[in-house]
Image 1 (cartoon, chains in turn cyan, yellow):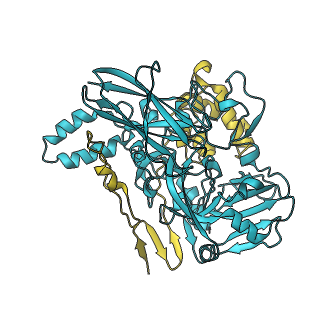
Image 2 (image 1 turned 120 degrees about the vertical axis):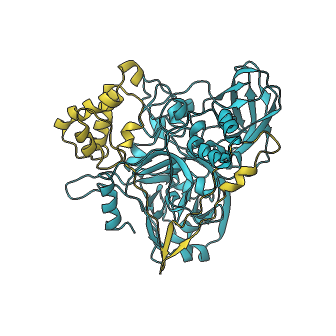
Image 3 (image 1 turned 45 degrees about the horizontal axis):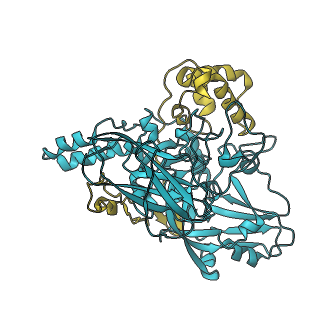
Length: 432
Length: 126
């Protein structure tokens, strides 16, 4: 599926022409809209402002870093981090609804040769290795021969919010938008494993997609490790892990993993392998680079370690930590004094379910319980709201979520890769 | 024969979501681009290309060549300032973990460039 022409084109990009970045926004929205309202071209100008200022809710922009917007095929304009491979972030305001539209869902690839062309008649998902009956399934067979299941689940990059860590660390400098909530439809991995008849003493199950490195392994050349992930066999076989062929009722966008994506509810998105085409059951632990060396976290509470004293023991990142986000107001937003304002946000955990969200407007001295929206499902995010009528002044709002297991958010956190952030959230607001 | 699939776009739904409160920032017009090509059973897209040149500095061409082989050099320019030690660790990681064919005698030149454009004193770098 990954043809030579595509590979050559990817390589050519490294020598390609200079592109144009949209300058980041440094215009106050209220002043701009006041100006635009008096203009015949007001609507068009407001559109222009929106185009330029989507980045205003972006912490990296608050830190003075560039955040151009870019539209990929099948997508709307997203915050560009990198384009080869594509890594683009969802603007915060898309999180003011239960499900994240496919076109606004963030994009994250590790390796620059990614599928841009799929023949849906030729495509096969293979399931082999330590099984009695290896499978090679067409997309039609997947839909026809297995019971469909549907689940709403949050997908969050392990490194979401990395740019908020201090001291900072190298990597894609995500703000809060490497995140999305979608309704996934597909087949249970358990049903596929049953059809293939796993042999006794299976240990791990590995997952590979159509993407690959620019410099793959060759004779006398180790190559860049292909992106392959694994789950323990009991997890893979728990009836919840899914091979999804639909996202929010439609096909997955190509850059979100068309035609199939692994869905691992409650776990960080590194396991949600995109363009999934190869599943292998193993009778020994999987030792590929992306499990054994990358995407590892300190084996400590809240995955904590200190820059001067790195944890000796690390484990593969796994279930998502409890966290909350503000989606309204956005960073730097001005709020009118003396008027009722609805603060909004969302909360996430690894599947136990959010029990409460508390919000403070006085630096953590007192906390008010936010009103939780109805629960959509164990693995969905939970949105929340709080009525607020502030007086003039500068505020730092804080939010803290707690789940049904009593797990909550931490005050300070750091780890070397900037993973699994679950620090109590804060946003600065000017009320005038 | 080529035909285009128009992807259902939900972005416009956002525009009316203020719930009787002060208006939220408007969503941009939903894009409905004919940007997926379906030819027979083959579905394909074409990714845009946007590769800004690295900022000027000693060693820029060397950094472009060795860093830009596998990934965009935006990976450099999106980073905050880091210490010399952090940047050296990145070069080493690219060579040892990701098999980047960077001869070790090029390290100094690449490191010099990275520190020149995104360098920091050791304490603030990490």
